[in-house]
Image (cartoon, rainbow, N blue to C red; front, top):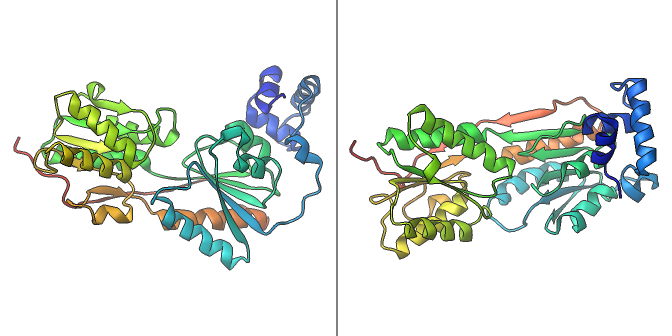
Length: 331
């Protein structure tokens, strides 16, 4: 079955231009639109699949799509979304994108089984987002950007947050700083590792040999990646983890090997989940406004549904939270 990407390739235009043309947007010139429609006919492309011809009634339900329903990061985010949806008299339905193209999440998007969606899932493709989004079915993306007038993107300043964390380690006298992250193709990972790299480059420090990046953003992966780092025999003085869950998993690995945090190695995380203040030593981390981001995502979604104009992009600042897992080193 042909995709919107196939149509864009044949017509020699961008995916967003195809989306605009198929939704009769005046941004696209008549010759370009004609070329796109001819390509779509030749490829037998069906916009939005079989659901495009279904009469759509309001379900008074909003979908929250995440990669994995597990994890403490989501609790405050969901609370922010839920309070706004309930205030509007809507239900909130959370679903996982595990299974990718065959997942229930994709069916909700493609078949418009809800009135709109908030997506925090790296494995929902841009094609699916582009095919699904429309005036009557807005989508809010978290930590991703897609060029479509019915898609709103909301991010935190991940790059600045990780740069701030690396700068703090450097200020504390650390010069050998590792980074342990998640999937290399994930935009979230890219933004965070860019912040780490930029801070080290600014101070003339090497980062190439200390970059570790695979797996998922959870405690088990932080634990296993840290054990691999320990096995290499040369421990850095400081480690930045892509999120708090990974950092907490890493601290467990250090404890099992008799390596003390922070006297032997300093550790810093990202997110400021509730558990971060209760582990010992308490975790220094970068705080992102989870509740506020969820509330804004839902608020913007309803504004679009109500026909109001909104910005296409929002960004929240981050804040360094200093606790006990980083120790100053003598230079």
